[in-house]
Image (tube, rainbow, N blue to C red; front, side):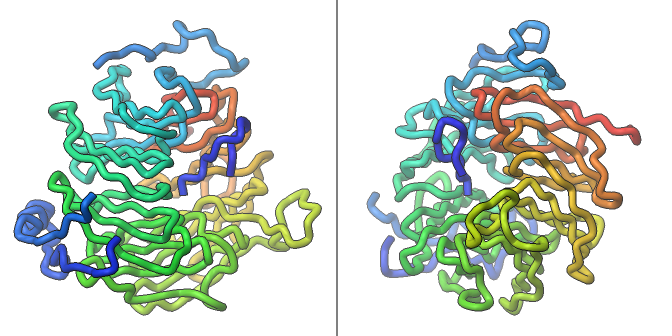
Length: 416
């Protein structure tokens, strides 16, 4: 997908595999896991200020309606990505077309860290599991890791063109997927590394499962692989008729990681059992063609997917602006929520039936998956929203947009 200026917004080794993290012996306790990692041998592959933060009253609003509480305008180009720190949800990190990432405090807008030195647009910026580290990655494949306490860069890596960046859920271990099909894994801060190699097809999306022992990676050729992070081998490969017939665009797992939902440009979302590697369901809207498409072969690409934590529901967002809510027990379409423009990203609230979407029309919307009704709608951006993040309570959202701004919205609902 591209923004209105034509900029890519898709956030989507060695031959010898070496033994690294003994993840099978990991306990669920993060401290024990971190201790275990200290004894693991890796192989080196050889290789503050608050400026830019304005209240709504202080800024010159370009939009007729601005529902945001604050606008962060430090970036000088499109803002491609945003994440909230997992420990407190009080910090945001944004990455943009200006080759920079910023870590800033949501409550008062103070800039805590300016991540500089990148050579291209920063399309990935994520916090570690304990919120002590931030990784920023640019399109060219330059990845930098920063320690928030000291505000210093502690290591950096250069790989092929970057597709995605993901922290391990309970250890200082960073994974990345690149356009040459490799998946990289580093121990931080030492930088010790191993790679997971596959046929030359872009590793377009990837997630580490909640057990911390496996990662699911989707590829441009429609293949999905479940990798064993200790052994370095693919324990399951889903391809051909079982796989997708187009590039993977997104994937998500349910709360316990037993199911993965994958989305593709082929217009389908597939449910995969991560234990058996079997496809247990395929979800698609009727017709399978993008709305208004003149090309009979043009499918309605899936742009984002996600599971509800409290109900057996899944959401699939499509390029034609359809948000589809599916019942997992029957795999039937329960609700079809239509947007006027293509959906970029969706996110379920952690402990409710509310699912939020951002789209190319610059609006953020909240939907009740039980009824299929839109609960609230928020405006303020003058260009497409490219990413957003919601806090655990579902009371606050931070958006990133092609208008060079990030905004903070307070989410209000009748039950609050």
